[in-house]
Image 1 (cartoon, rainbow, N blue to C red):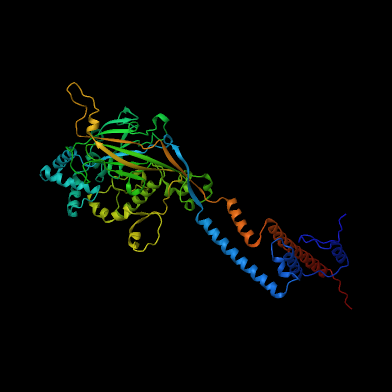
Image 2: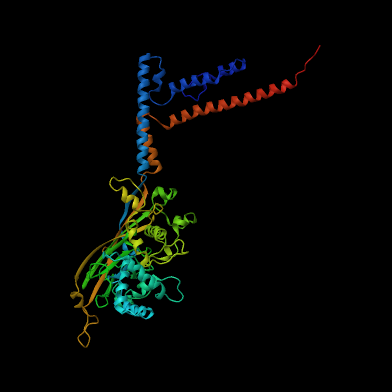
Length: 561
């Protein structure tokens, strides 16, 4: 049988409840809340499950020994706070980590990149002669065709600054002529894009034969090459609509013979305005959803030579993000999920039109916004789908070339974060700042390597006709684009430390320093909850007593003599 008069070391046990009941029955004066708190606090220190705190009030120790224990506990508490703060800072700084999830991810599940092929000659000689003749006939002043051909060579400045010192007054004078005599009747302004598309070499004359997975296909269709805009203007782009996003095992395009093979016309007969110091052509490897611009990131630029059989091996890396990171804000995890990119709240940042949100498209949109603000025009190479507001926007003409060259450094150097770096203060201020652009949480990154063989090896494989001739002349080049490996590396971004890892780490640290445990937490919570309850209860009782006193005051009977 349990003896009710006994006591216990547990702080939640009411000591000697029989005596407490007797005292209450005798109507003794209640102890104040402050003195009761001090007494129970001393009892807590004597009986708490934390190690060493009972030494502070132990009657067996001298005052000096108690002070030593007090200093030990103070030093332990300070050390605990410092270690916990450093640990928390480390957890916050390393919230996310990117791990290799699958080093043998099947390459047939990786989208095949878009391949944009651009001739180094950006203006066709035949087309520019026809246009020069048209301008000669429209001109009120009789001038030879050579005069207009010389002026039309100024259009190379739309692609790159060639380094030749040209008086910009000549640009403005010729542009004034084009504004009047180079426009159609239904055009308000000179349509630079229409003219440059007309002058660019046609893809049908440049791309001669196409083979995909060792099967010859029509070169110009939605499943093969289409005309598209790139940083080099109109080019021939394969897989523009991302039709090869997913493929079966037999069509994984993972070898030079089973990938994309293109035969190109390498003749220089039609050359008028080459823009690079190379005899070859330009190849851009990029995601099919991105506008192809090297300065916007994630575009790989290659320069195969003339008369070569070029091999471009593509190596893919898939970067994914765990769904558990959706609870964090995009700027904390440093990426956008697809549903966030299409959120109307981010409409000014995520306008997609026919281009989906990607980091390169966001950079291109930021650059377009800056060009329109500074030069009041849009370069004809830029897609209209990335322009936020088309009202009053015109294509850049020769009259805008000086403005475009003035800010070229700014538009080719992009910052999404600003950090002070000694010696680069001016470059940081002059660069274009686009803090709203973040990578996609699910993305595919490509790497390439290129090798080449003489074209003679390919010519030797061609069949001869009855006249002992092949279907192509010797002025050709061959381009092969394929996955260099049958697998890709699959990375996933996830939390570096889950909640239970953080909980266990903090618990281990606290147990090492102060012997902390869940029992001690319960004891402390019980102690403070008890006095919060008693304080509130006494306040309620006092209010009731005051209310009754006021009622009694109003009911008092005064007897006057």
